[in-house]
Image (cartoon, rainbow, N blue to C red; front, top):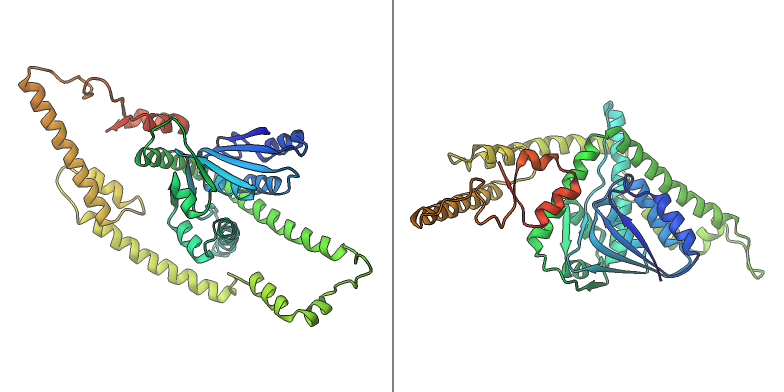
Length: 370
């Protein structure tokens, strides 16, 4: 079995053309495709998915590390998916970027929404979940670790490794890696916009090509050619079902504008309420933490309270350790590192690292200090 690797940020470190060349070289031989990526450009992931789906030989995808965001779509095309027990799988809605007037924004929003629905159907097909269940998971930006991937239906088998990574550490590293990628995508809004547009065009082109091929295929073995009128006459229920699926998620412009206006009002109200709830947890000494959580767009008052409690516990533990050290005549290290076993790094220095170095630092038990 030939091994092919998809590693790094998709569209930067690895591209669809790399996978195409590797599969061509495999020439129909069974392949194992090892995936370790925080995500990247959707158009490349879409093309990789199709390359795997259309490959002549048996395809096995092994998740080694991350299969997040756009990279989570790629394994869905394989005949079988396995994951190492310390791997992370993550799904979320498609992220886009645009600058323009309201008509351009609404039109682009429809495109981004349609791409999320397309990915959602593939997740549902692989996992056996309903599209509503998948959409809820995508809305929540859902992470899966170890056996959770099998239980959710995205992976067929978990492979034991010699590592002893725990879920919390693995999740922290995954989130750091994804947020770094998300930040990188945010600085390239124009490229992201073009990527989504290209991916949508690719999806539409593939659908049209399939229809054209079906229309051009001659009747075999003397069977009567199937025309649209004959299909309607012979299978009215099937035609109605196809039409319903084609219209799924589509709304007229007037209805869409109403939804947009409602969403804006409800979103603004909900965000204002969330910020007030976070600030209501104010405790002296935690002002920076509270303001950071107030404007991260997701933290609740409960999240903030837990974070403050954790910070207080940490301060208490450090104070107790310092007292013990003083009582024994031991002077703590200047960097606050007890015994030098735990690596520490100032947040400013941490932010200068690339995503891989950040992930490695967090995964190895490193501590970020302000």
